[in-house]
Image (cartoon, rainbow, N blue to C red):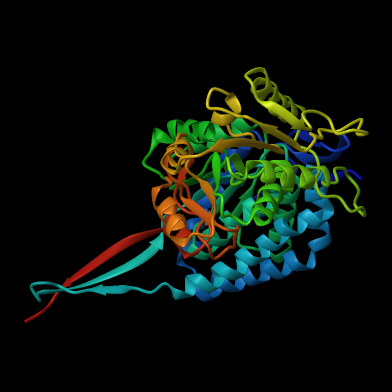
Length: 477
């Protein structure tokens, strides 16, 4: 199957002057040919959004909500095709594509409801001479750069709050996974969404990205990607004062104490580490296990790792698909080789899965004896590799967990409520998960340090798209 898709600019589906191939990393075959945007197309999309701002920002909340509901229904009616796009462009197991799809529908419904809860607020005047009213208004045009790991989920995180807030948006999906985003553009065109409210283009990432971020049109740039990409975008964006909302790289620690439910801990670590082939920003990167239980935990992790079914079959019972491309495979393998060369033990995996001859599949891997001198300790793996470390001292493991520039997610496993609370207070991460894991559209997703600024999901995400206005009126006497 080879899909053909167009850009969506100013309410129209556009073929552009060139096309680019989309390759399925599981089969290494071309599965799509899409319109490739150039710098001129990026400028057209920004200008279309700028023209749309007065109309869309002035549209009543009720009318914006109606458009969001129409788009959501179109999404629900096109489930099979949207999931097929994700399945093809990422090689994801079919069951895994549902999370991407559902998040898009959830986001449109959730923010259509949340925007209706925002009302003007009055402030008390200390002198009794004035009346003050605070309102929230759309900041302007938003530009969104999306990572490839969850093509529709990442789009959902941006599309819902932007539409609800009244901000026209230019969305640039990764050139590795543009199919599903372009399919959303088709739905926008199908329902007749007002021109310029949503624009979707993809092309050579640095060329299109630089053209968008260096433009003075966006009031907000929002990004899901690496810390390096975030810094690059901010440097280019210094042509004007802009807002930034960025979810960047992670280096999540897991702290497993002697009293932990080891089966639960192994389920969570392996579940998140091998889902999406480990290409998840919040996935465990460094697993610190107390020496009293490390042997038992290691056995449980290895048993689960050996049970992971790797492959690509639309109708098969598959747990894990490929990593995104050959370059990612080589980067992951390089981290594993560096760790082994510096003293780590390879317990299982560490290369291509047995019996798999093509595609960017990396075997579910477990390495032990990881230390701070290894690259895999410092760098985000973004692949299906579990790194085990041992600790004995609580203070020391907190220091080790915090010894990273990243600050996105972290995990604690203990039955001791006091210790869990103590660890949660000490860990310098935007998210701390205790004895489990949960993410949802109504829960804030945020990082500290070099893992980003702003918030995805929850009502807090709307703050990035809304500016505060104070209106003060003197009281007449």
